[in-house]
Image 1 (spheres, rainbow, N blue to C red):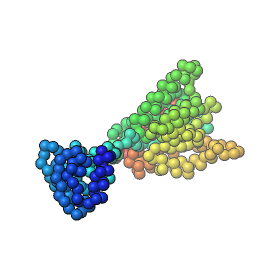
Image 2 (cartoon, one colour):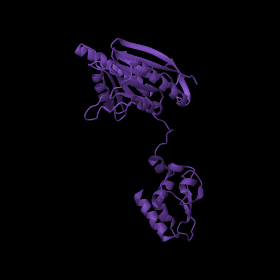
Image 3 (cartoon, rainbow, N blue to C red):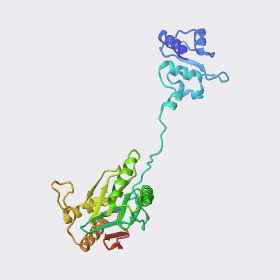
Image 4 (tube, one colour):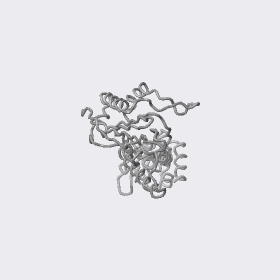
Length: 315
């Protein structure tokens, strides 16, 4: 085809006085010629050997041809003139798909506060998608041991997958080490797991909470790719922008990275911290449509784990 196209380009450069024999040799099919003085003459070109000749323009041959990409002459002329044929456009043009994402943000809010001898974890139970409420009783909290809790917000599918994986790894840890996994060990394990999936990350925002080996409250906050740090309190999810400023104002905990180290755990008594969490979620529920229905609250201390529910607005 390249050699034939070169001949056609020479014929176009020569003008409209083309001989039938020359064009017949170039194209490989019999056709007649309308002699015109234009450098782009109109040709009476047969679309195939079994159809009558039709008058088509060289520059628009692929558009006017009823056979389209199956017509040899149209493909040859398009190649010679440097205009991509329909076949080439079909092969090179990217296939368009409807807009789709493997992720969905199902909303929800989670918060945690660490005290000197307690840890409070709270999470809303509403599960949404867009402006639709899928369920009002979806727990975002999983308790892996007596003193360790994992709470997650974000995409429900990744939340369930990640929590199931952490539960499996926790059982393996207990079989291998003959003791339950501590909050520090789970924090490191979760960070490694999230970092392992960094190229296709879990669409989750997590908090690892509980009591450490000294009996003090511990809260670890994460980003979706595994970066984490220990803090005195934290909030994740759709209501973070509403609850985090309240916690900052009321708790005023110092950063654990300060040198020299300062006490970064809240000095609030346990019951006052629980009331603060309740008030923060009630306020967030008035502004965030993805936070509502109820709040599941867990209080972990040396006596064990206490669970309670706080009803929020249903609309």
